[in-house]
Length: 363
Image (tube, rainbow, N blue to C red; front, side):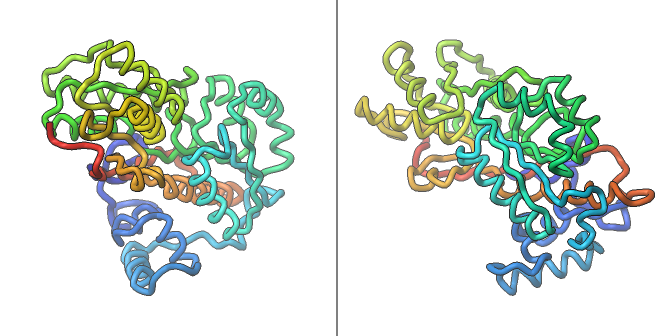
């Protein structure tokens, strides 16, 4: 599956030349050059480890579109601390570590110091942080949220705090957000299994807080259900297991499936780490993929290739870098008269694609 950038409403749209839009963004340069947002960002900022060919492609695309990067010297136009906060549920999980690293590089090159705040998956820490946004505003000019589950009250408080805000992987928020279409990614994963002839498919689903801004697990389950429905199939409740979004959750769900449910011919794991846990449990029972069951995940975790896990790859680093770029643009323009970014916040859905490896096969 390969999906294009989207408009502010989340609908997919092809990149348009400058003559048809009021502002060209970095994702337009990436789309025209055929390179990732991270590579484009590094090339535009003349950072090392970018090939001459890539630099030439980025330069040509930027010139064709009339794209100009914000000057780092203007970084304090919208604030006075020169710092931004990156807030993550945990700093150690693979997704967040990748997104943080990419965002920090963009912030550092633009002259901003970064304050990393890990909530360590503890609601009490989140309540304390959002209970003192005035204190946070004294330390930083802006906030980048990484998949934080926020209730309506917290969203309203943050939107009214005077802080510039952007996010990764959130839903229906009143600020710029970057993510993927989770339902479509799940449909692509499930459709791959269906195209291989599988009809008896289990889902090792995630779980979430119930906050309106965090709907990843429910969107992926919806995509799974839609794919089955498209083939005239119904979801078997006995093959729906709550696996969280962790290796241990996937392992326990697979144990439950083998010992107390029934073995399907294929499994859709809501994320790669859940898939890793399922593969571990299968080994304990003397089973393997795809000999006994085909397994597919979502993410393209760095270990997915090593374990041969078929997956729907999402550009994690690009999401962090792009969201950081949007936040810097908001900070820069917030201190200018008639700011060019005075329009409404936008939701950007980046490309995903199927990476077929050895954990799936035709039935």
